[in-house]
Image (cartoon, rainbow, N blue to C red):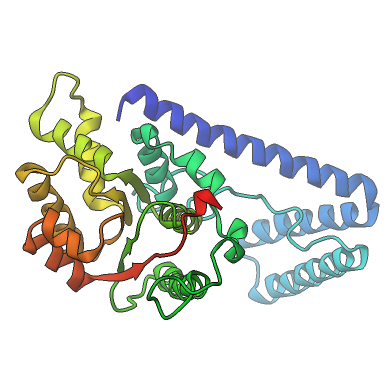
Length: 328
């Protein structure tokens, strides 16, 4: 990543910490001014803590220290009771974090990057994917089964609405196991069906849920994905260090979503690269979701048996069908 961009991201973390600290101080001042008994007790607790620290430093007897600790715990309990009495949330004065895992530093205690920082870097690297706008527009709270027809459709046993309810039930299970870092059989998903049936929208909803849990997500169309690969492989004139990072991230991200598979230029190069991506991610147990307008039979025609067999053997397949939602 460009050093100036990295500094910009880390400054944003600093801004977030400063902002949340200022908000905490504002809440403390508000409570102290409104509830003088809580303010007085808070001061007593602080002084008691200092006295215990001095006693430990001066090697006072364990009995005396234990007595002071008992008094301190009694004060803390009394303060908690006052919060409950006044109807104040117990965590109201706690410092709030945008990311409680790294406490808005971007780094773990081990020194490794937190997943929230990795995702920020990913989102910066993939600005062209417009991920922020996609996630703003797509979430499960807005998901409406009523837009899917409840009438029989062609030769399918279930109506499009019942089919979507079944798909959503499986997606709920998929998200649960993803968040718990557990396997659920086939950890990769393939959405097939003609355009306008909600495949892309569902991919976006899933991406949003996974991001909320602190996992990294890359969401790219197949066309853009191959453009990333070509930049790295052929070192085009506009090649930069970030292009290598983009390439590596395709393999390393927790969830890779490939939208509109089949719309990219399909040739021996793209087929080989697609196989490498899927095979590597399957072997390293990294999860992948693919959406495509092609059915399984067409996948065999467009791609090699090797790719299609890898998908069928390692992806759970969901078929979307029904009237085009864009026309209803």
